Image 1 (tube, one colour):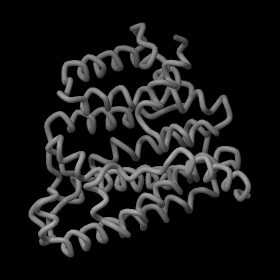
Image 2 (image 1 turned 45 degrees about the vertical axis):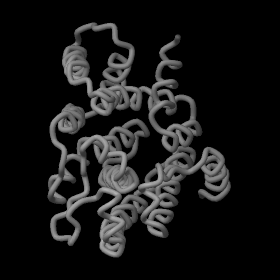
Image 3 (image 1 turned 90 degrees about the vertical axis):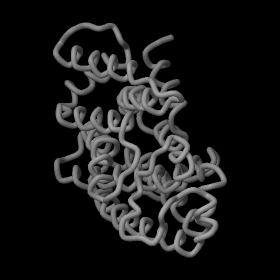
Image 4 (image 1 turned 120 degrees about the horizontal axis):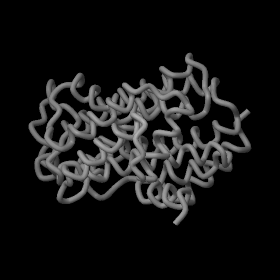
Length: 273
């Protein structure tokens, strides 16, 4: 299997929305995006597998550090990411923050304040936005908006995945300051209005961050904006569906179909100016 096929398969297995949207980047950008997400997905797989694989994660982390220091390790996922990082001038601190957030998933189960949650989000999602800004050679003025897009998308993931995360024993959305004591289905069914208000509160935060992110779209060249805006549109669609019926989060992942994603690509290709 070629390196490009490895990246393609790894990315495809990890994310429907990101993957299908990213197919519409120009080939030279798509190759770099796949290299980035190959690295991210492998690290995430170690901490999200059942059971978790902490030994595998720490081997992966150690191998990355060796490769970043110039040592040949022969891992196509890590080697491609390190090469990409050198070519696009990724900041070392971004990858350390990413690995820190992944490591938190091995031990930290509950986030009881927004500050704790945002610390996790910085490493797990905001730095991904920064990587993408570098991959697309966007100006520095675009970077804060790229961070916000990562934050907004991750927050929707936390809302969408309340039930799935609970099976891992995790809760990323803080309950502090709310009347809710838990987020399991039985408890929520007994407190439907409180849960609806809880989700409205968190969706309002998402909308603010999403608006801040979208103000940065003006920095993105048209050909690159089509897949970025498509992914963004699909997260907005997910947010709307959950706001209409909060109990959907207990009925399976709220995700757009491949057809919906491709129709959004077509709409954006015709409408992005």
